[in-house]
Amino acid sequence: MSDTSARVADSTGNWVDTRAPQWARPYLRLSRFDRPIGSWLLLMPCWWSAALAAGIAHEVRGLPLTIILFFIGAFVMRGAGCTWNDITDRDLDDKVERTRSRPLPSGQVTTKQALVFMIAQALIGLLVLLQFNRFAVLTGIASLLIVAIYPFMKRITWWPQIVLGLAFSWGALMGFAVTFGRIDVTALVLYAGAISWVIGYDTIYAHQDAEDDALIGIKSTARLFGAHTHQALILFYGLAVMLIGVALASGDARWPAWLGLTAFAVHLAWQIVRLRINDPELCLRLFKSNRDAGLLLFAGLLADAVMRAA
Image (cartoon, rainbow, N blue to C red; front, side, top):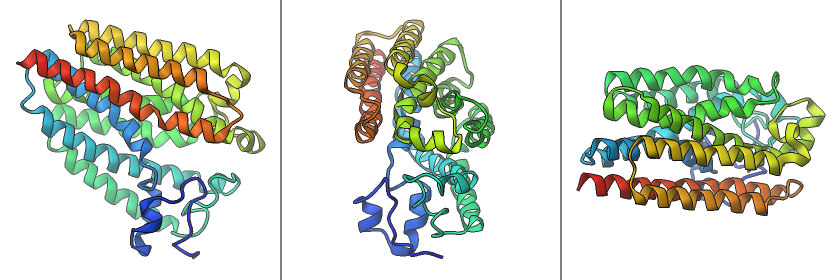
């Protein structure tokens, strides 16, 4: 087994490298605690949905606990999903410059150790999920099928970002499942908007690996769109804003939510203007900035929920 202190090429200088116990570092890297942006992006639709549902219900007393539980759940389940992704991709990751230093291809942990760690994270996620009603528990469990098949999609389709969107946007359904014990049209439209957002930002992310992916036959929307990426982003980011707006209208949202959506839309437009697909470092920065875009929308939805409950 290789040195567990060895750093991952695309994530250096973080707290895992500098402060975490050496024995824990490979596991924290498997769950991406050295680069938590993905957990934040998984969390955003959860928080949007929780806030919008609370606004519709005119009831925010349970919202703080829901926000906290979603935060914990998003981080541990994203960790479990990334561990599963690394298990299935360990041979491919060894062929890509950016990923060959990850714990599995570099030999910092064994496949068996990674599997045990994945199960442990999933059990923590289950404990969080069990704090909700039965319908929400079943809704959360249903997402595992999408998570399980996602790593294989880039081998068979040019659109793996759609499957990622289905998984990463699932939280848009969970807020309504938790609050109302059902999923209605408003939740489904919010889910569709979140999926469009994920397709857009993950296309930006995938441009970092486009050359390596072409060499080893991995498919992505980044390779599919190529020089037309800006036009594709206008389409998918535009769809995201439009569909989320329909969800807000359906949920009778007030002006703070619309202000949040406007700020979200401006941020997405800024990304499109700034993007240079041949600049991997810029692609990564713009991808990461989607956390801020999501928080802008959440702030508006949260203010709306508080206003409506007053």
